[in-house]
Image (cartoon, rainbow, N blue to C red; front, side, top):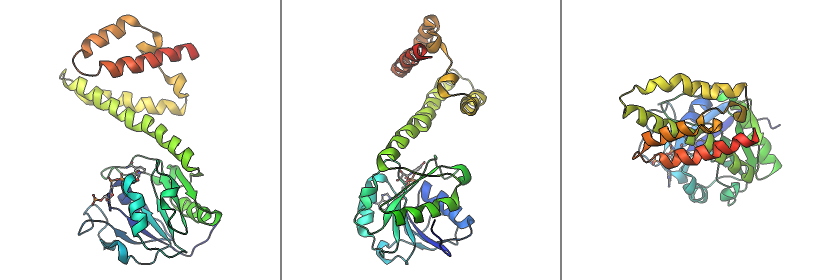
Length: 259
Ligand SMILES: NC(=O)c1ccc[n+]([C@@H]2O[C@H](COP(=O)([O-])OP(=O)(O)OC[C@H]3O[C@@H](n4cnc5c(N)ncnc54)[C@H](OP(=O)(O)O)[C@@H]3O)[C@@H](O)[C@H]2O)c1
């Protein structure tokens, strides 16, 4: 494991991930958040106002790590425009972007926090899996050291494995949340308060602490309860959600044979 006196970090980007990482870096002893670099004239007001801010990528202070927290398709472009010392490490924090987009640098890698981040919701970093990758053993050890300063759960994965983790995260979080958007819309159009679903939504994930996802599955599709499925499809007519209902129900019914 690598030992630094103090780790100096510069963040590029001012969005969700940049904000949450800035908060945890400010909190942790042994980490010095040197500055944040963004495109805006000023650092957005949700950031701590003591953070140094620059909007000039070509005039950044020397740092141990440069963490690129921007849109996936812009990472390579920023990596090519940022001039860093060969002892510094440039990182991105994307689940689906290969480490190779940073290969114009001497030392580079990935620090991907496997969590959903929104500005208005705080997160507890201690148990967030931090997925790391480095272009060399030396870079990897330094990135692991940084990861362990913000979480107890640091895992090494290749770019291909990280892509699989990211697809899984899309299913478990993005798609699940979208289902709740659909559910809310159905309730609202029947003049029912959407909060009624909150205990069920919480139990859906709490259950997984005790049961496997397959064992936790319930519902009319698993039971192949065709009468109920037909009633649901009648109710959904014209909403545009019949196809999603049918596709997912048929996958769940097939699960029945495996259980
Ligand atoms: N959100 C999550 O839950 C999550 C979780 C894990 C990893 N990630 C990864 O973290 C990274 C950032 O995601 P995010 O959710 O923080 O995104 P975000 O909130 O949309 O913020 C994106 C940031 O990128 C900046 N940006 C976009 N194009 C740029 C360019 N050409 N030059 C300079 N800056 C540019 C934006 O600047 P402006 O504000 O000026 O437009 C903004 O500061 C992505 O790689 C994403 O895959 C996200």
